[in-house]
Amino acid sequence: MAGDFKKGFSALLEARNPKLYMASKFLANPDLVANMVKGVRVSGFMKHKGVFSGLVELRAQQDPNRVGLIFDNGGAYPDDRLTYAHLAADSLRLARGLRERGLEKGDKIAIVTRNQPEFIYALAACSMLGTVLVPIDPRARGEKLTYQLMDSDARMAITTGDLEPEVAAAAKDSSNPIEILLSLKPGDDEALTNKYQTINEMLTSREVFGIDDRADNPNLPVQIIYTSGVTGNPKGVTLNSARNAIYCLLGWLVWDYRKDDILYTGLSLAHGNAQAVTLFPALSMGIPCIIGQRFTKSRIWDVCRKHGCTAFSLLGGMMSGIYNEPERDEDDLNPVRKVISAGTPQAIWEDFERRFGVKILEWYGAIEGGLAFKPVDKGPFGSFGKPLPGLVDMKVVDEDDTEVPPGVTGELISRMITGTSVEYYKKQDASEEKTRGGWLRSGDMVHRDEQGWLFFDYRKGGALRRAGDFIKPDLVEKVIGEHPLVSEVCVYGIPSSMGAPGESDLVAAVVPFPGSTIDPQSIFQAAIDGLERNSVPSYIQVVYDIQKSASEKHLDRLLRDAFDPEADNVYELKA
Image 1 (cartoon, rainbow, N blue to C red):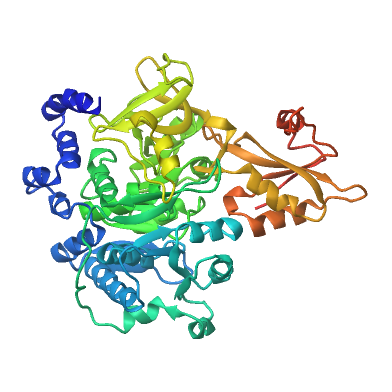
Image 2: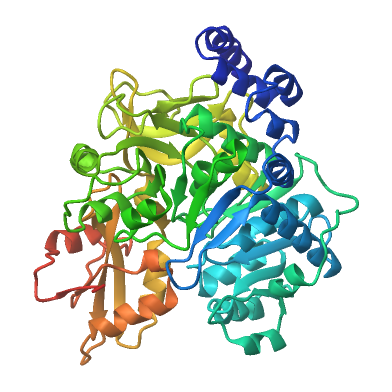
């Protein structure tokens, strides 16, 4: 079926959209397209078939002194400004340092850091050595962090001084020995240098030499990126260089970047969004990108003005956070022309564009695959778009895989025209189930209108989504339930105050032990200490009974019906 679909689109794409035609041919035959697009700005990278180190070195050869990456450190210390030559040289230095530490092809290297240059060096170094980078969200901690280190079989964990206590504790709890490699930043405890080898030493003590026996093979795994883990423990999605190549093509196929653009992201590089929307397109097209340590809604426009950014990316309720900032006369005095968003609230879409003088490109995707987008000024507000023609096919189906009519909610499934596959690390059964029948099962419940525009409704199984992440209520309940004053806890979602479609604010309904009094602030603190920041509830609802069904399931609908943010038994997390 995939072959018929591909054949049917081929002639149409060649006639109407040469770029998309070249992309589809590239995915099936990289050598053919490399010849077809000689002289096109991305053809040099196609020759490297997506290997990240090849892309970095290509940039260094073509424009060595151009500042291609700037890491905005928010004033904590000076920004890191990297020329392409600097990027390539330090990537080689780190690769040599890792090899000298005994890292071999196939070894897994976890990286638990906020956005910083060492992430780029590590990704390039891994593609040279044949090792596999395992990016882990720097907010991960406790059992979730330990699980990812163990499940990925990490031999080494790269981290920074401020995150070292969490990573060291997780590594200690891991069943496999994990060496910690530290990246010291200004203000870090210098005494840590007596405890760990540092990347700083590797980058300053070595001349730049090539790497013998390089593993520049596009079919080798290069990253394992973990899912949110909504239906169980997080699953590691194994990615090879073919995914990198697709990310690079998106810059001119979907995001429609121009040669004079300057990109910005404050999303973690451990997240597929930052890689697909910003990092890979910028490097493949040779345009600058600014990478912030973290997203800050109050500084976003100042950062963009400072660096002259013309496009930036967002997830979920971030856009509402920006919109809810106090209005300023200079709101529309910024260089940004386009915001690339996944989850724009329909209620503020037009006002956001008008107030800040920008246009919104909405999109949908997941680390396992699937891609839809709504180009600027096309389609209805609130839609996340249509599948990319010539590359992705999408259907909305019921439980029997029968396609449902427009206006009816069903599960979104998709397939690439070149075949659909997902490799969850060490989880073959889950991989096969995810792509049952040749279609990627998203778990997202959506509907389409008569013209084929897709709209997100909710997550299958009632999972909670917040700021683009899927949250496991049972993990939140476990952490809060361990508080000495809490007898019972039920975590549920209410519609997001940010208005983002399909997103929730979290409420933890707690029952005190008999004779005890709940201290809400201590519960908030326990959640902050034990959970990722995105999983910390927005509200504590103190109740004296949580009603249950005959099967002993919490009747959270009753708690939801009784919830009132102004009620005396409801306490809000303060910023």
